[in-house]
Image (tube, rainbow, N blue to C red; front, side, top):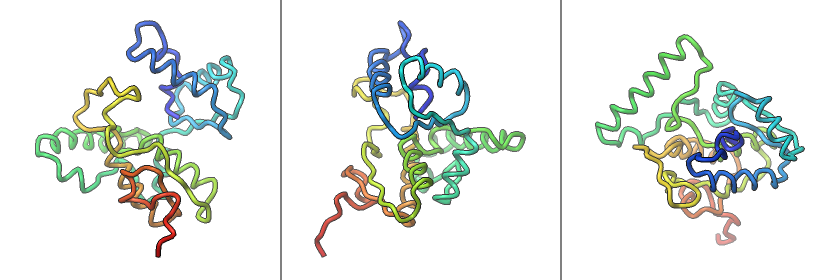
Length: 207
C-alpha cells in the first residue's frame, strides 16, 4: 500500500481528486487483509496512528526503499533502477530525458545506497504485493494476479483525470519483473492484457 493513500493531506479540503481519495480511504479502512505493508517507511508511526484512529486494527508494517529493492531483486533478479528493452525503443528525446533520471539515481547512490529511484524504473505497489506474497508463501503456491495492468496507467481510478507524465509510471519495470517471476513461480492472471506474460486463470484444460 502506498503511504500516500493513507496520509490525511490527500483528503483535505481543496486537495486534488479529494472525492476519489476519500472513497479509496473508506475502502482501505473497510478492508480486512491479513496485514498491511506500506511501501515506504517515512512517517510510519504517524500513518499507523491515523489508521488506528480510523478503526483499522490489523497489523501494519512498512518497508524502506532499499529493503523493497533488495526483496524484488532477490526474488526476480531485477534490482532497480530497472531498465528494459522498451526503454531503448523510446524516441531519442524521451531516452535523453529519462537517462537523466537514471544518472541522478546512480550518482545519489554513490553517497547513499538507500536512495529510491524514479517511478518509471521501479515496480508498482501491485507487483510489490505479489513479491511480498511470494516471499511469504514460497515456490509451491499459486499466485493469481488481479487488478494489475500494463495499459492506461496514466489514468486515475475514476477514468477522468490524466497524469501529466511523459511515460506511465512503473509499466516497464512491472513487465520486466513479471516476465522474470513467471519463469520462477506459478503465476496466473485474470487480466487479458497480461496473458502474454503469464497464463490465464483458471488455466485452460485444453491440451
